[in-house]
Length: 233
Ligand SMILES: C[S@@+](CC[C@H](N)C(=O)[O-])C[C@H]1O[C@@H](n2cnc3c(N)ncnc32)[C@H](O)[C@@H]1O
Figure 1: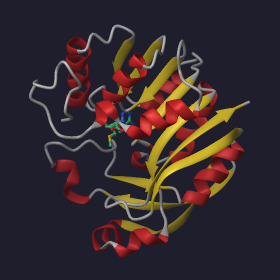
Figure 2 (figure 1 turned 180 degrees about the vertical axis):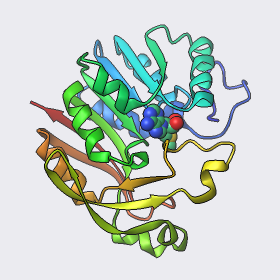
Figure 3 (figure 1 turned 45 degrees about the vertical axis):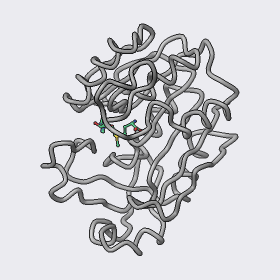
Figure 4 (figure 1 turned 120 degrees about the vertical axis):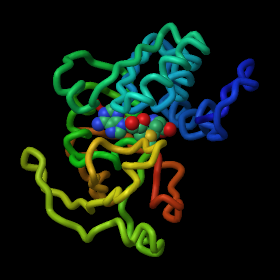
């Protein structure tokens, strides 16, 4: 669990600084602010970024979380921090986006795409729902294989197809992680990581422009990672 922001810093939580996350501040700034905007957040975990979106002036933040424990934590945080402009829904983000026709000004997809078995389907659905994107994700880069732990979990590239868009993915095996009490990954036994260049190609394919990359960490301990913002015209 993350450390809560003032005046709740005395509330016993964890140490992750997600309520004051520089990746999110960077993304909001990069997009020119989010005041008055509607936000769709995918996989809020504990509502830390939802809180940041409300504090930054979002008019409404709709958050979809599949993990029931995480969802309940979001509800606790909603009450603690009076997140009256945030709504938390329990369910699968792909099902939600496929069934819902509402348009959002911004989609926050932080820490979730690399948990998808169909990451390009996720990008396709985000593209149908939102006109701006703030994403942070692990991606496949060869640098990942320098870590013995990642090398054991990441498989060689295979071909995948989403609605005619052919691309490469690397299967990532969660192994026994799914049995850990605090597991906050995807809903399957594995996920598929997009290579960095395939992510950029997919974004261009779905009409995303003005792509800005930050926080590129090829040697992140959990795998190469980057944040990005993008706009659809
Ligand atoms: C690694 S955590 C990231 C949490 C937070 N967004 C952040 O960046 O710190 C991934 C979150 O996505 C949620 N998640 C994974 N797959 C999901 C899905 N298919 N639908 C909804 N939530 C999902 C997990 O339960 C978890 O809360």
